[in-house]
Image: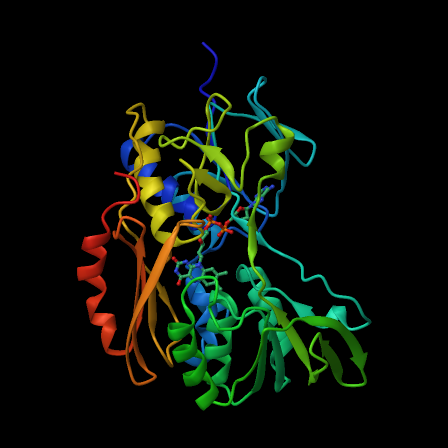
Length: 385
Ligand code: FAD
């Protein structure tokens, strides 16, 4: 009989590694091949935006090397290897000119940072930080510098502004929305975060965009749409991420915002599954850790022969702006309804989103209202029963 083909997991981020662990608990013997574009180190990605305040280097964030992971998981892990093609009919993936056959294939490709639409001679000073490799580059580049411009006041831009504010740097943040964290929560809560960072010296330019970056002798000058010029040594772009769908799309697999799957994490192609940032699970493309953990817990038994639907409870996200800790349970996009705000001074804000049927559908909390999190979360109920 033909030798059993391995389970192939492409991607060794939290999604790929969590799935591998869960699956190994159920199937100790079948072969597992993991393929990753990066070095395969295991790390917790949320920590990369809290390292400066803790004085933690990128290397200290690595919990296990690819070698250790391969031993623990009894897997073969191909690092620095990019999958270029999937052939669902032949059941192969191609990397570096070699075809690898799979029994079942899992795409855990993550998302990539969007490039800011900028012009000018200073673009080589712009960094994006979406994974540990990026963070290593940024960490090295910023070390000798004081003046940082952050493009984007969303989750990642705000967390880095908060983190680097602990290092006595001169930080300026630009965002087209009128308030910080504006795509996740109403202004009342975003303003609380903004004020607490401003008290640490961070300067905000909201309701405008960076149009161009001109190289100068010692850095760049950014020109904003509102006419302001900002001098900086180095620039971080944090304008958002986009699920990696191109590989799947080229193989004829259905994609929407992410690689489309049903509740069993099955893509439109037989024996091919997806989870994590790259996946759009039953209509939800959620770029957070909790959803991928739930997905891994369902997909592992499915791969082991016991089809299991993913269950998503309500999953609030902690915004790690430690100067003003905030929790948000984002409102599903395009849901109609309104925010109800309760506020006690600038620091204590509760924002509750009610839909047209007067059902609670999302919230954002900071200050003393943080303690309402669990109660509100129970009220919200599951995202996918
Ligand atoms: P990734 O970790 O991006 O892994 C993708 C993997 O795929 C990588 O190994 C890559 O090398 C590989 N790959 C991609 N394409 C190929 C290819 N063609 N061939 C081979 N390999 C390939 N979420 C929270 O819930 N809470 C937080 O506090 C939080 N903070 C965050 C802070 C920052 C700074 C960032 C950037 C994200 C944060 N997130 C947070 C989001 C969370 O970290 C991600 O949702 C999660 O880590 C995604 O994991 P993943 O495995 O899907 O993707």
